[in-house]
Length: 373
Image (tube, rainbow, N blue to C red; front, side, top):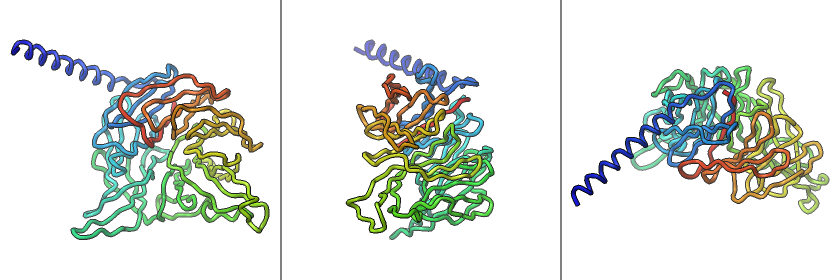
């Protein structure tokens, strides 16, 4: 019995060593210039890189601490994945070629506080700074005190114990953000703001809750998928009631879906209805090859003609997906979020083309990113 146990233990040790070596080799696989990849995250705390040419898992990086929400932003040189994680409390930078952690910032920066970022982080277009909105609570032995939010600015060269370079007061209820080519920052909240990251000045660039569209209700926005798109825009979906006249009778109103969009190169904004509200979508994306086509996903994958405000096609899903992504050619759709599989669809026909199974558990509300190295 002792000999059998010893042999069994030796076999387990050998298997563990082999598995560790395989994992180390996998983590060391470098990305290839000119290739298109998709990055996403899942439980227990994985960062996955998918090769979109083969539509197969390319490598998996193990991340530190805890998972959640796993939102990803890719550096402009496509070499570092920044991840909001550890229960919304920390931002990590992971070098994609080596899986090495090269950046870490705790959202809690002041003594005695616990702070969280509600999907509010991004990297500047020049790759030199990271922005986040901290929502802090001061912790006392017998009570908590909610503090005012702040916009924090970090240098991407801050290493594994990054400290803020600058901090500014910020409005409440801020969520996703993207940097503009001119160095400004666009942030979604009650309205969409353009922020001067040197002075901390917030200006409303797109009225949302406070829009003044005649015979429209205030829009309803639930959007936390902070995607860097091939169209180089900052976009999020809304729903609203469009009334027949100034009486604003709900019985005769149309209920519409639309999107807010800001061109990150020019700063030009759009507020566009694209179709009737027939179901809820958690995220949406316009086609890289046809700006008149927009896709939405939750319980179905749907395709709309924006000018005609018409549903063109819809695909049945075997479970909900939260995050819709597309390849640069605009020919493939990739659905992430919820479970640990990525669904693939033809962008024209919405025919299913297979799935990519990920090791580990749920992706939950991760934000997936697609890019060319």
